[in-house]
Structures are given as structure tokens and as C-alpha cells.
Length: 244
Image (cartoon, helix red, strand yellow):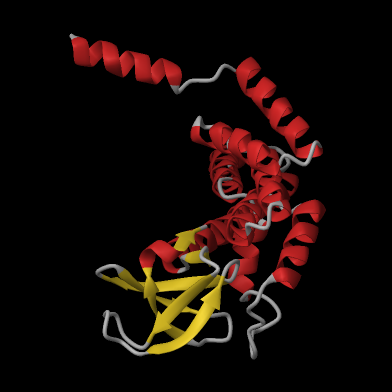
């Protein structure tokens, strides 16, 4: 009985009404404008912890971290905001953050691979929903086709929905492939050592610094193998990188 009451109390403390969330968001904004970036960051993080993680919260949180000089967290939250929807302000702050990074990766490609750019440029659930709608409409029209008086017009409409289902089905497949095969993360410490192999006795191959976006390839104990944008690879401690 006591444990049930404790769980209920914790659940109530972890819940914000929309009005409470809006008030906290406004207070965090006020703290930001007063240049109290740590207080603003705390407010935005509490909103995230309570399930209010929209693009505005992530953007403001990333911007607060950027103003506070916390480059790793700034890039992390701005990248997460960017994945929710493309936004000029998010892109501008990310571009500014990159100018502050220590790492200027030589040999890095200018853009992400096409499939990754395509997945990040389209909403996660949108293509799947559109695919289902087009697919069911196509089959509904196919069932009515035999009784239709104007089959030519209906045929064009069916072709349109079939093309839509193929297009959105392809986008859905791209999203699934990227989500299962591409795991990106951001370096958080000011300096993180990258080793030749996963072990305490391994020789340091190179160093990476806060804000650098890397790809996670595999894990071994407390180490993870990372790949830089230019293809360079090595092992670093898992706690030093946070997934997007």
C-alpha cells in the first residue's frame, strides 16, 4: 500500500498540466533574455523530462547551451530539433556552433549521404501514414472500378494513388533503413581520446572535441567504435558520446 502511494506521488510530481508547462516555458524564456542561461537551461530540461520535447523547447535549450559555452549539449539539442523539422533558425545556430568547434575534419564530405538527407528532410511518421492512405484508397477504387461508368477518369485517379503509395512506401523504407543502420552521436567532453582498440592499454590514435557529430559503429564493453565524417575510425568511452 505504501509503495503504491509512493508511486502515485511520484507520478503526480512528474506531471505538468499544459498550463504549468506553458508557464515554465515562459519563465525559461525570460531567464534566457536576462542572460541567465543556466536557469533557462534548467527550465527547458525539466520540460523535456516531463514529456514536452517539441522543436521550440529543443531549439531554445540548444541555444541556451550555446550561449553558456556548452558546445556538446548545444549541438546535441539543436540537431535533435533539426530532425523534427527543418528550420532556418536551427540551421543558423548549428552553423554558428560549427565555427566554434575545435575539430575541423579534413577530408569530410560537404553533405550527408542522399538517403540520410532524404530521411531527415521528411517527417518520421508522415510517409508511413501517407502510404497507408494511398494504398487503401487505391484498393477501394480498384474494387469500384468494375462498376464505374467513367473508367478512364477513375483509372487516372487509381494510377495517381498507386504512384503515391509507391513513393511514400519508398520513403518509409528509407526511414526504416536509416533508423536501423545509421546511429549518430555528439561528442560531449571538451576533449575525448580515441584509441586504436577497445582497452585501457590501447594507444591513443587521435582526439576529438565537444560538438563533433560522429557515427556509432559497434560497442565493446565500455567502449564504442566511432567513425568521423571523413571516414577515420577509432574507439572511445561510451559515456563521452550521446546519441541523437
